[in-house]
Amino acid sequence: MDKTTWLAGTIEEPIDALEEIVDPHHHLWDFPTGTYLLPELHEDTGSGHNVTQTVFIECGAGYKDQGPDYLRPVGEVEFVSEQANLSAEQEGAEIAAIVGFADLTRGEAVAEVLAAQDAAGGGRFRGIRHANAWDLSDEIRASHTKPPSGLLGHDDFRAGFATLGQMGFSFDAWMFHPQVKELVELVAAVPDTPVVLNHLGGPLGIGPYEGARDEVRSTLRPALEALAQHEHVVVKVGGIGMSIYGVGLNRLPEAPTSEQVANVWSEDIRHCVDTFGPERCMFESNFPVDKQGCSYTVLFNAFQRIADETGWSASERADLFSGTARRFYRIDP
Image (cartoon, rainbow, N blue to C red; front, side):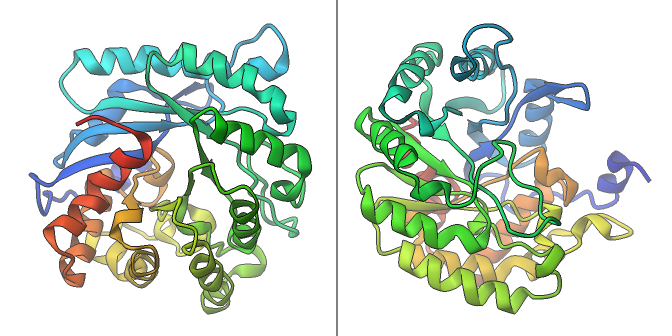
């Protein structure tokens, strides 16, 4: 069964089609293995929920093929800026902010790349993601940046991280759950750079972590609670369709319903929101990556189900679905 047929098995109407959503995490790409550009994004964001604005997060797309290696990621910001301009002219969600990549191990010299990305972003560039997702196990594939162990503690990385904040930009953090304690140490040592932790902190469920969800929580939750003590750190609540989390949504004979997704992830989402507060959490799609687990409508229906069951107030829901993302990424309504 192909993915389109699989997803079509659980067509749902949105639970609340009027609740405004700012999706703070999606990708765009045109790779030999597949294409996800503005038409595909608008098909997903326009599938029933009221998604008004989005934030693009780097994924290695559109890099320049000439010039110094460290400047080639500027091409991604240029590529997405063109897509964002088109989105502003069309009906559907507008790409309102762009997060690129710059190699922070260049230390203070990273300022050149950041300035070039800011110029290329047409007023939408907000910061960078330098993923450090890495695990000792050979069964866990490292992130696309090929990071070394302990990257966040390296002096050159910290100098670049500090420069990022000094220039008024933010940092998207993508790592696996054993590494969140490293982020705690980083934000304590360099407290002036705004940080958003991606994907609930990366609770792995494959390789040596398969079937060990309680043990993973026992590592991740104290780290999240320590991280929450730093008020300039917020969290993206999502990434829950990724197969590396090991819950098996992608292995079901039929695509899951929003009720099934909510049942699997409610406890971890509620812990995260209880720990940081709704004003420091934002629901994210992580599309098209999370499309391996469920459709866009099912995903946001699951978030709305959890919000209904938890009983968050109207203002708390507004933070989770749109307000926190707008504040962090400095997006005007």
